[in-house]
Image 1 (cartoon, rainbow, N blue to C red):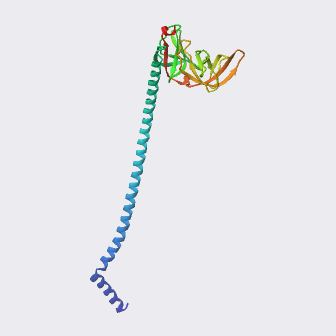
Image 2: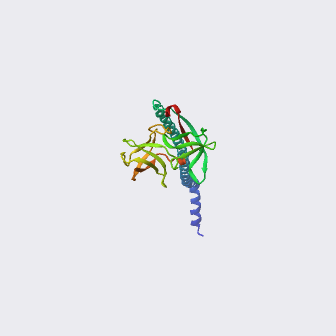
Image 3: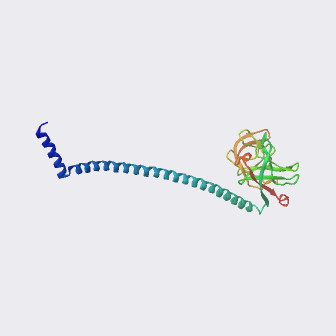
Length: 256
C-alpha cells in the first residue's frame, strides 16, 4: 500500500474524532429507529384502543339487548294488567243487568291426550252447574262438574254449546264445535234473521252461562240449510293453547 493511503486513513480518523461525526451518525441512526419504534407504538396503541372500543360496544349492545328484552316483558305484563283491568271494568259495567262472579282458574291437565278440546281445571263446581270460560275478555268455552272433577269444554269441542247473537241485527244461534282450521260452527240460526260475513259474534246471555255482550269471534262463512242457517266464525282466542281462564259464574237470582 502507498504512503498516501495510510495518510488518508489517518486524516479520516482524526476528522471523525475532531468533529464527533460518529456521534452524529449514531444520532441519525437512533432517530430513524426511534421513529420506527414510535410509529410501531402508535399503531399498537391505536389497535388496542380499537379492540377495546369494539368489545365495549359489543358489551353495550348486549346490555341494551337485555334491557330491551326486559322492557318487552314489562310491556307484556302491563298489557295483561291493562286488559284485566279493562275486563273488570266492563264486567262491573254489566252489574245493572247481571252479577257474574269471576274467578281465576288453572288448567291441570288434558282429560285425554287424544282430545285437546277437553281439560281439567282446578275450580270446584257443584254437580249440574254449567259456567262460562273467559280468556282476555273473550268467550273461550264452558265448564261443568263431571265425576267430582271440573271439566272444561273449550270452544272447539262439539259439546261446548252456548247461545250467541250475531251483528247489529242480533241474529241468534248456538255454538257447536270447530272444523279442522279451528273455526267455530254456529247452528240453528233462523232463516228470517239477518246477518253477514264480517259481523261480530257476542254471547247472548240467554242461557245463563255468560252475561250478554262478551265477544266470541267474527263470521267468515254462511251456509243456508232447509230450515236454518249455519255459519262459521273465526274465534278471537285459540282456547286450546291457554293455561289460565276466568270462570264466569252467574248468580242464580240473576238468571231467574
